[in-house]
Length: 95
Image (cartoon, rainbow, N blue to C red; front, top):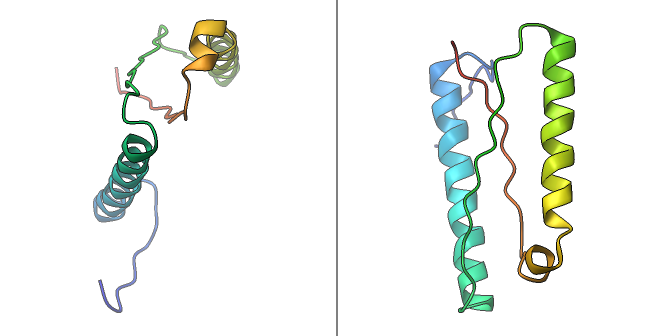
């Protein structure tokens, strides 16, 4: 897009669409390069979920627990030998 200016607000639908398109493009490039470098590699898509957090402290502790759990998982020998890169995304869904 030539000479466009966006507000970059978190809740702006147009800015969020643009950000999703940029992230998607970057991820496609990373995956394509990984396939070229490691043709026998496999992909693992992992979703970790927790109950809804109702306060900031609860959210903070939940995110710490998820990060700690994923770190523990990635230190296992079988996982660490086969791990090329990590795409980490946190998202909150309305209840």
